[in-house]
Image 1 (cartoon, rainbow, N blue to C red):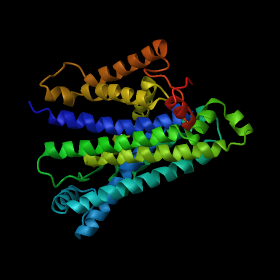
Image 2: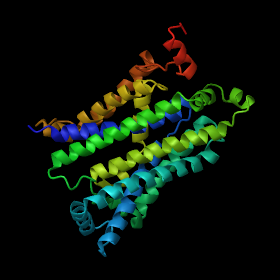
Image 3: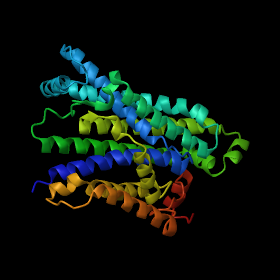
Image 4: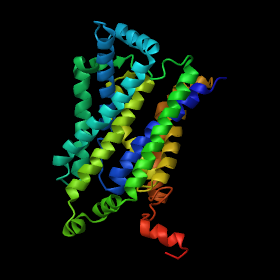
Length: 344
């Protein structure tokens, strides 16, 4: 039995979910911002990829086709196979554009939303995510409306064989997830990271000390939204298809559970929480069981939702701080004291 497709799927989704969870941990775990619109910024990356790739590849290839048609999808895949540097260049372009668009939208939405209480902020962002999904679904000229858009070529399309191509892409996603981890760690243990925690723990006290708390929140929203958009790009190029049904609000709460399970404010804990939730999410799907030759008499999707619900209840009752509670912030002075062997 060839387990390569299972390994590729698990590793790739783990990397994508980890980037989303780290961005959520910056916003919710460290700054106290309940971003229930996380799936919106995730979808921005996917929609940006679909729009840019579908138009640019047709223009560069000199084809006059409807971007979301089956013929256009086949044309893009063949062009990516024959022109590998074009596919790689478009992939990198989408990463940069999506990050910029995500950051801009995060800052823009934070301007009015951050002036309300946390519960209303969560509701506003949740509504924005759903409105965006319905709008894109109803607008055919964007990604084909309810039918979605296929033919978003994997940047490694030039590699022969689905297995090697998938493994190469999975390695790339893991590398980008590792980069995101390093980024959020550096932010967390910087002076700005300590300011984020101050805003979370007592915003009024931070304001009294002269800190511009709304500006801090806007910056955090920009960084978190940019990371989520990058995750959306990685998803689009992996599945090679973008449809609005992939971006419902359930994904936001799954990512939030990854943060709560691992330990809000602790990035290492979030890695563990993401690993557990990814295993539950991927290994309880009918497609996974079918690859193993198993066929259950019931819909396993309902069992997955029930399992996630039970896990959440158990967390609230017995481990509300998560698997790895938040630790102390590392500062240059504290590291120097530890280096000298003095008890801190």
